[in-house]
Image (cartoon, rainbow, N blue to C red; front, side, top):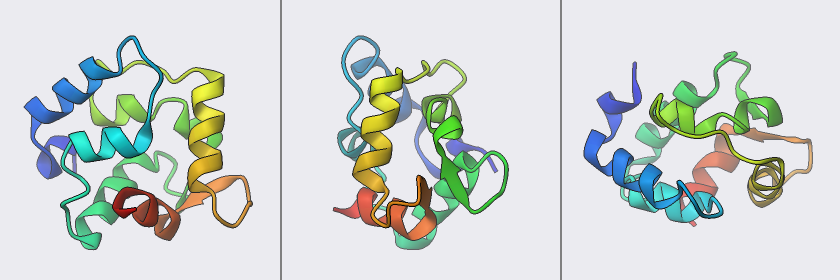
Length: 108
């Protein structure tokens, strides 16, 4: 499954362009691509696309490349953006984002 099976390509492109030169804000990005309005089931499908290694978690290494999960044109997150994203989503402090943590962040 690809991200464009779940989200509109033009919304992904607009959101990527919005954060091309400014600090990445995951909550704002997820809203811009239409994820906030998605069902929990579809948000979990997006999570599975982003969970590149299939571990059931999005680890810090995968987070750095999260925008590439939406489109190959996506940029890499900076170290500080990656750390801030992890800190915002990792509610249990285990250093990775689980599927439930991801869904909570999208729908907050």
